[in-house]
Length: 249
Image 1: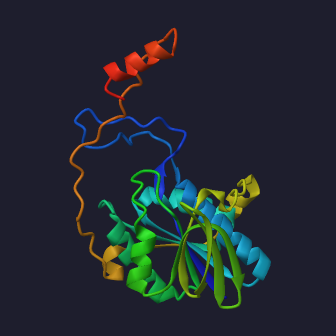
Image 2: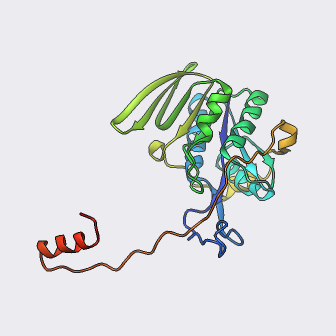
Image 3: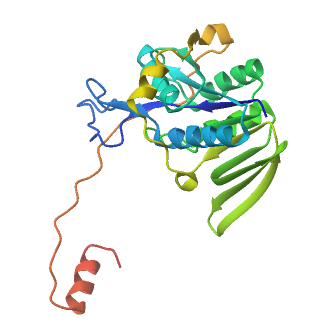
């Protein structure tokens, strides 16, 4: 194994309370803290652990988005990625467009593994990894909670409804990761300083031969409904009566 690509996305930090725009056209992003998608952070951590165990492997962090996405790529470099690539665009990037971008980079970089988070916390689409594997015509392992590399094969333990399932795939392959795979490392100040000297290349959709097609339309964005005030009941009979009144039973 010589190279691993890790795809990361710039999202609103999970600690931020998201506010919906008054017209319902989306969420407010002005002045909001942005971070690496948590699932992608786990994917990067797994790539770094494989590198530390196997030795001479290059880890490349790639992302698609506005110029400010370089901040998240610098975080990936500070964690330990060797270099980064930003496909810069101001256009909204849908899962299929992202998959085509990563396919173009895969053909250029020839990685042994492409890691992604199983989903992004902003749209929860859970589609890009599967689309990429289909377009690349390579095996995929989704919802990975354990990854073991042996030669040119990967054993992937994945979480399914019935428990755990272990599959073996030939490399190159696409792997999407779940929360329980690992715990990402803490970025230290010296690593942040070193990351400033690591290469970060900027390219465009046109340079990769990809167009940002629009296949999805957001009709309306609404905040979740506020929780209703609870009701105290004296006994089971009164509880059943309240539930019947609400049409729940």
